[in-house]
Amino acid sequence: MRYPARVVLTEVGPRDGLQNESREIPLAQKIALVDALSATGLTRVEAASFVHPKAIPQMANAAEVMAGIERRPGVTYIGLVPNEVGARNAIAADVDEIAVVVSASESHNKANVNRTIAESLEAIAGVAALAAAADKPWTGYVSTAFGCPYEGAVDAGRVLDLAREMHSTGAYAVALGDTIGVAHPRQAFEVVSRFFAEVPGPELRLHFHDTRGMALANVVAAMEAGAAEFDGSIGGLGGCPYAPGASGNVATEDLAAMLAAMGIETGVDLEAVVAVAWLVEETVGRALEGRFKRAVQGGRNSQ
Image (cartoon, rainbow, N blue to C red):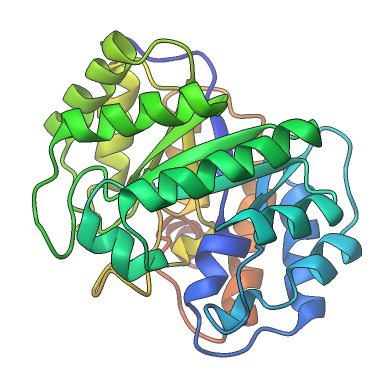
């Protein structure tokens, strides 16, 4: 088995996590969450989504979030955009990086953004042009890369075709998303192996949801295939409004703890990340799915 010496984590809780909360999160708490995450050693934080507020009301104050956070040197603050309007707003808010999304399945793409895949790729080309003009790097996400809630199995060849298309359009990195948490370790290994063999050029990130409790196992399998960049969501926040039953991303603190136990560097202060995981539970007003913080608390309580 081969594992990377270092893994880069991208924290997606403030965007991919909070967007799925039904309870309105005050602006000050969103800003406080991003600032707290920025102080843990994480170098990449997806801070906001520049979507129409009617589509995702929780993300309505994206520009105010970006204006209010304390930007730490060495931290990349990322904004998700659905189209050219969102890209212009994100650029005006001075995000460091832009993220765009296309689904690997037509049904999910239609439900998610009300477009065909071809129409989404056309919109992404417009975003890419704006990003290039503003000297902003961008990452292309392929969601439902391991399975679709409407169509079931997704052909890996289609996923890789989309990755190549976005790289040729200007994406410096491509992220493959297990949107509904159906991936398994063998599939993760095979898809990642094929990516490195068939899609030369872009950086690869993996975005595993933990619906079936296999996200950490999938991370290990992906690392064995050569991956070294992963998304996490603090506390396990998240889900997908257009993927019924999907849980949040793998919890950042669980992921960081596993990597630390394996001797893999992340630059993350695990104690600080656990503290933020407790903070986010207070923010959303409910218990979250991350396990490590409760294991640590239970160990302390039993001493």
